Length: 504
Image 1 (tube, one colour):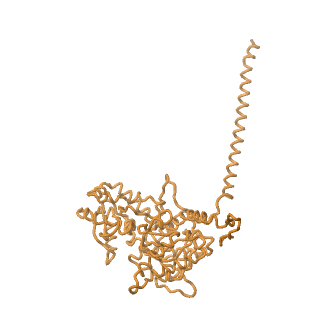
Image 2 (tube, rainbow, N blue to C red; image 1 turned 180 degrees about the vertical axis):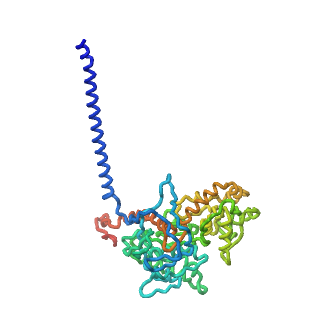
Image 3 (cartoon, one colour; image 1 turned 135 degrees about the vertical axis):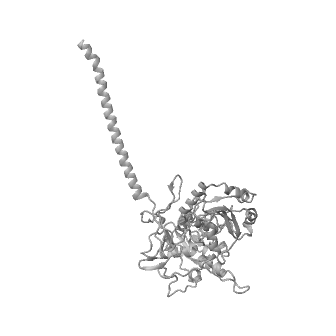
């Protein structure tokens, strides 16, 4: 019996020992394999960090501290020297709220600094148009202490050329404000973009009319001079203008020069008066108008405290795409809670528009002579939910901002149907309106112009939009230069044909 019992338990003990040995062996293998992969992964990350990241000119970095709005004031400074700031800088300091897309991922361009080479054009092309006189050999004012005044009214809405140029000049000072997306470089080969500082909108607004019949206007003369100057520069010859940035925000500015300078990237308000092969959303940048009404600070209004349902005040009879304004005027003029009337900036027009928009739930933005107008940005500043009726409109930095979160879009063909628009707007309830109203307050800083520029204000948002165009510019440049260093072409008789001028 004892022998029988020993024979029956022996296999069990052997199996147990084998199981333990197998378990120990597998555990050891898995342990060493996990350490192997951890070490490999770590070295791979270090290798990427030290070796593989591209050394792009566009990857200079900011301080990575938390973004916050700067506190407003009557003046700001470079060091101890006072500099005037925009009179609208009265908003309460608040933490920046960033629009998020793609499942909540942040869509910002943190860390990008655009390197800009700016031509030292004579003052007649820029600040000289503001009656500024240079002293000594400098062609630029000292923006730390002497900023030429810019005319108000309708001139101001197309003033982006002024703000961007100031921002470039301010970037040259060591103690300039830290919130920067652009720096000026003196060597064009180091630049991401070549900036042309021609105040084209101001030139059109002030000098489009000739001084006498049959004589060229100052605006046209400046455009002729600009084309001659640019096409003579080595930077232009090298790229044929593909890496140049030209400002033509007023729809009628650069009318004479645009067909000769079109390889450049334009900053525009819309594409309404441009052929598609000259200006388009792939090549060019859409920038906001500077709103004319004052920003609505400390807005404590709500759905019920804004008595007007729908607001429009402006020119009613327009040509081209603006015919819808007339149709809508006749459709809406009898509605008791709709304000639809003629208006202008004359006298106290801006004040009345400001009061009217702040008292309205929705503000109409209807195409006029061109697809865009300043009215949209006045509505955003008033926290009046924009109703956009302009089928061909292009919007600033729309690759960054989802306008459908705070704007209503209506096709023109639908808007001019009887009762369609008014019934559609009446169908938007308090909850949905409040959501869009809150969103307007979150995004309004993207459309505010300041000097010095602030984190994610309109100036820096425009620069970021330009920065997003740089890779496509560089691709065009590299493709166009494929054969610039090709060997001499041989003809059928094996006789050497001279190399092109830029061969070596």
